[in-house]
Amino acid sequence: MKKSAFLVLSFFCFFGGFAQSPQYVGHRGSYLGVENTYAAFVNGAQKYPYIECDIRVTADSAIVISHDLTTNRVGGNLEVAKAALAQLKAENYVQKRYGVTYVGRISTLEEYLAVCDTFSVTPVIELKWSTGINNDDCSLIPLLVKKLEKCSFRNRCVILTSMKKCLEYIQDNYPDIKLQFLGGEKWKNSIDWILSHKIDVDLIHTAVTADDVKMLHDAGLKVNTWTVDDPARAEELTSMGVDMITTNKL
Image (cartoon, rainbow, N blue to C red):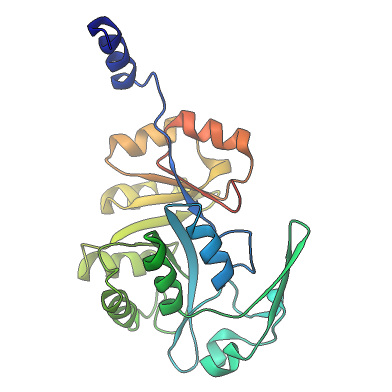
């Protein structure tokens, strides 16, 4: 490359002439499989450098992957917090996604982490309100961290949640763990908290502007956005300079 061309390229890169490509996060694994189950994780892990899941705690203190309070939406009939792991494992799930019907069973945290390890992807773990993992009671967060340590993922994961007390607890007790604050349409009501705690964010994409991204980047924070399945919107977010895009199928 000629020196003049190199200088032009360097100028554009330095002053933002080319948007840096964001890293993609497979939402609940991917759309190829029942959400948050083994097949969805394996398929997502073959496409994305990060795969996301949602965790809850069972009646016998197992940590399982489930977005909802109950398993009804994916074909079960149990309340996760009131069921034992064996009961949940006995259920068969069925979910139709983008015209294809998939079957599967609930996964444990360990099974999800094993997929992440096999495919060398980074786990993104969303904390759902559970016994011992909520704003009023963080007593089971050490159990979660022990499981991450046992699978060698304590320093190779991202934990996200909208529950600020849980994020504060982890930041105070495990400052080496990467965190993201999960924000919805009214996330800007939490700007002061975000900036004071210096915690990265995962924001609903419809409430994110280029000015927001710049403000957060100027504060040294990374920006993830959810859940983006429209290629045109992904291009817009890329031009804004977001660091990560969470998607089902892009």
